[in-house]
View: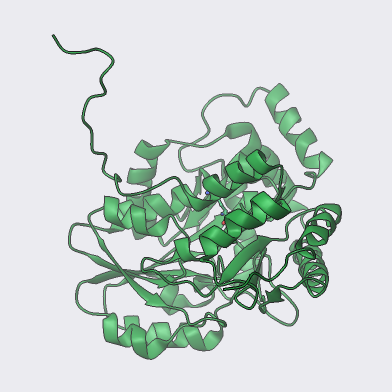
Length: 391
Ligand code: GLN
């Protein structure tokens, strides 16, 4: 007789994958009572007006399915700001879908586009969800490294790896984890490479409103010749400090979006209805510049605070992460060092090596500065105590 308590042998489709580094480090933060500067989410309050609006729509009875593509109001609000910021005109009826956060939009865009044998080019360090999604679709991820410490694209290398099997290029600017930004010249190079090919582009713009002094976020949306082959993904959770609401969007020309929605409708069908209504009202009145300015101040403040610790901060142009080097303090691998930092000094961070497929370790940690000043100050007090360890 079979033993009921014996697990059935099972190999899942992502058997080789582990829980994400964000899950791991947030769990370690809880276990060690650390200040959690690891997983990227704000710890400050949401605008009370936004919460009131959600409450209003809950009470008003918006508690059944939203339209599959998202509420017309929210689609229109996003199309409006895209037009204002990027001069891009998308049709709110046919060229945008509201998604369960940025990650589901990325997953649906990849599932829509990639078939067995297709190559997908992406830049490493790469945000962790792209590669598993490409692999699930049967695609082959091809990574080109962004050179430490500036994390800029080496276009000669891109030219060498693009070939007739390349189906998609994934672009993430402002970049997670490095905070680097694409410039007009990068898009020009990209346009030259994709030229008359049928290569698709996936633009992960989730930090689109978070760019720092004198810099401007350029999106695939800015460039009509690129836009026609692009899925562009954004996140309202990131923009409005509500990462737990998991509401994002994907924009693409009609012929791409039509196919995207065929996947989306079976992945989630639709996303949270009352929150979409509240977000639409909120976006209408939003000053995006004030969000960028608030994060810019935090970035500068955190970098100044870090100057009083033994860590060496790297330049940041966008997003809500600050990288800092520790190689002069310890030669420990970054994962081990990050773990020790949480256990001995109660500060949780994200090591960079998990963002690479090969064993790359420049002895860099990622700190999320989307936190109350008091959290940042208290964490930095701890970081000041970090001592160099002999090799
Ligand atoms: N985007 C967040 C980060 O980079 C993590 C989100 C998640 O945990 N999946 O920290």
